[in-house]
Amino acid sequence: MRVGVLALQGTFIEHIDSLRQLSVEAPQIRLPHELDTLDGLVIPGGESTTMLRLMESFGLIQPIREMARNGLPIWGTCAGMVLLIKDISNYEMETLALMDARVKRNAFGSQVDSFEADLEIPPVGEDPFHAVFIRAPIIEEAKPGVEILSRLADGTIVAIRQNRLLACAFHPEFTDDLRFHSYFLNMVSQKPSHNNRDGVLRGSQLGS
Image (cartoon, rainbow, N blue to C red):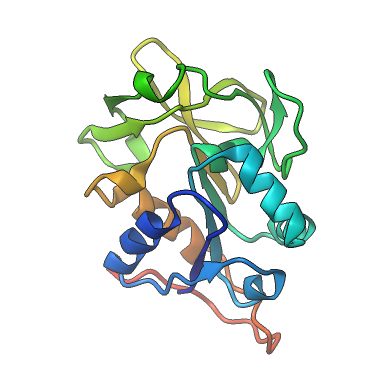
C-alpha cells in the first residue's frame, strides 16, 4: 500500500511516521506527477491559506480534485479538513470543494486556546480516542450523505466521512494512538488502485 502525504507545509512528518509504523509506504507529495502511483492521500494540519497557495503554485489543486472524483481515498486533518470542505463560513477561499459540509476556521481561538479531549469514535473502537485540537476548525453542518463519526461533549461535530473522503478537526498524528490512521488505511484497502503509471489495476490490502 502506498499512501502519500502532502508535504508542502504543516505536520506531514508526523503523519508519515504514523503510517510507517503501520508498515505503509508513505512518500512526501509536492508535485502532480507524484500523485500517480498512490492508493490514498493524506492532507495534514498546518495553515490552510498557505497550503492552498502552495498547492496552486505547484499545480496540485485540479489533479487532486480529479483523482478524488475518480475514487482516490483522501484524509484531511485540521487545516487539511478545511481544504476538503465545500463551504467555509468565515473566510473566502477556494478549496478542493470535495465534501458536502460547512466549516468554521480557527473556531476555538488562537494557539493558546488549544486543548485535548477524549472522543467517542465508534468506527475506530470502543475505547476513547485522545484528540489534540490546535487552532482547530469545527464542522458547523454536515449535509445529507455525510456520515458524522465523532462529536465533542457539547455536540460539536469534529470528524466526518463522505464515501472515500475522511476529515477530522483534530491531530491524530500527535498521539501514539494509531487507530484513526488504521481506519483510513482500511478505507484505502477497500478500493482497487488504478493510479499507477503502468495503468495496471492492482488491489490494495491492509495486513492484520
